Every structure is written in C-alpha cells, then in structure tokens.
Length: 397
Image (cartoon, rainbow, N blue to C red; front, top):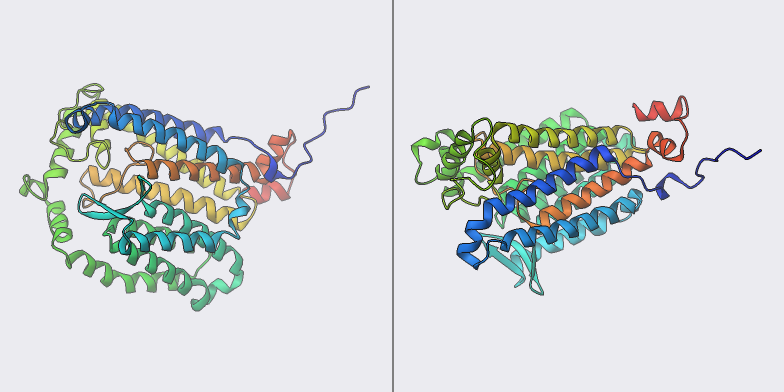
C-alpha cells in the first residue's frame, strides 16, 4: 500500500505561495495604470518629446521592474527585516540629507525631492516611508509592556518621525510628512502605546502643523482655494476646478479611453497627481467605482494578513504597509475630488512614477510573504487543516 502524502516539513518561511486575493487586484490596477498613463500623457509627450509613447514606455519598464521587486520580496522571509530596521532607517536619513545638502539633489516643479545618480532619478521619500514602517514594526514589537512608558513607547518613535518629517519639509514635501505622521500614530496605536500619550502628541503637533500651513504663502493660498476653488478658477483653484469638471463631464459611463478633454493642457499633471480625474472623465462613475473597489479589496486583504500574521512583528509590518498604501490612495482621491487641499501625491499603481510604483509593488511582495508565513495559510499550503486551538486562535486574534 502506498504511503499517504506527507505535509511539507519545511519551515513556513521557506514556502512560496502567492496571495491571489491581494495579487490580482494589484496587477489589475497596474495594467489599468499603464493604459491610463498613455491616455493621459500622449498629447503632452508628443508636444514635449516628439513621441506619444514617451511616458508609457517608461511606465511599462517601471512596472516590469516593480513586478520583479514584488517577486523578490515575496520570497524573502519578512523576519529578515528585523535586524535591518536601523540600517534601513540610516540609509533613508542619508538619502533625505543628500537631497537637500548635496549636489545629487535634483529639483522639478519647484520642489527638491529627487536624487540623481548616474543619470537615474528617484524619490527617497518612498524609501523613507518603507524604512519607517520596518523600524516601527521592529521597535514596537520588541518593547512589550514597556510601551506604557512615555520615554520608551512613545518618545523615541515620535523623535524618528520628527527628524524624517523635518527633512521632508525642507524639500518641501508636506504631503509625505502628513502620511509619515499618520503611519506613526496608527502603528503606535496598534502596537499598544497608551491613548493618553498619543493624544498628548497630537495636541503638541497641532500648533506646529498649523504654523507650517500658514507660514508659507503657497500653502495658505492652497487652503483658501480649497474652501471655495470656484472663486479662484484661474489661480490657486485652477487644478481643483478642472479636476471637478473632468469628473462631472465623465458622467455615468465616461467619454471613452483617450477622449478626455481636460487632459489637453487644461488639467495640470494629468498622468501623475490627477490621473484619477482623467479616469473619472474617460471611464465615468462605473470606472471610478471599480478602481475604488480594487483598492478596498487590497485594504481588506492587507488587514486580514496583519490579523493572521505569525508574530507581532509581522502584524505591525503588514498593518504599516497597508496603512501607508491606503493613506496615499485616500489623500490623492480626496484631493482630486476637492475634499482636501492640493498636495503633490501620486495614486499608487496608477500614476506615472517609477519610484512609487517600484516600492509599492515591493511592499505588496512583503505582504505576500507575511501571508504565506501565517499559521493558517502555512497549513493550507502544506495540504493540511489548521490545528485546532493554537493556529485558529492566533489567526483570529
């Protein structure tokens, strides 16, 4: 009699299993993004570079590199990042300092946000976001009961955030600073930092954030135009009014791919910050709802992965990566719909931009690895059922 098949005896971290519920919506969004980048940028590319394929070719290359990054990070055991938390954080600080204080810094659109090395440009803020998530996951998971102490559970994490945010503000990049702050507070809350400490931090940072907003004319003008953009249709409210017109003219079914009117030198940055507006005009309300549904599916799956992770570090890492992605999506969509003041943030997986696309896909790869290592999924991959009690209890904790 033949022996029944034996479960895989390898440790969970050596198994490879792609989380289809996470991977499919991500790849679908990347595919939509390539099509929409071409639609939104073809006229602009022809006028500036003599080829309507200029931006879409680069985006396709970025997508391939990003998928390669996803495959690599999905096979790297996520616990490898624990001892790398401080080196990654140090590298992020070095890059942000180099942007502002070295000849490697490169400016575009009035902001100094890029590093140019050997002809290649990338945004260190994307790497800094990933480094902060890894650092917070490591630091919060190792402190245990000491998180209740203000000087241990709260202060060090806020200091790291303030340093990173301060360097970003020098670029200036207020939007990325806001995202880093939100990530820090969310992860500290999930990690178990007392609410009284989190509330006191918000009260302390509130006046600072207000001062940063009103201390520069362009931020103050953005805020006043946000309150009523139609009073400033040719100046500060120009972006929002044309974005709203794009959504309004799209109607229920849209004008059709390639038929956007606002992208024809009316809507600024149609292939980056305001690609969601072009989607609304060309694909209509149903297209917008499909995009929102795909992002909600990613949020749901990322949260489930965090809940079912094998250890606190995995839970915090998964939650931090999911929160970082969700926050950027929410802010970009809110800006294009006139619900928040204008900020220079792209829409993940859809907007043109190599650095954002690569690091977001790499983050998805990390989530996939955390998912494969969870007790429930590891048993499913091995061909067995979850062990009663221990595995199922941890998965639902």
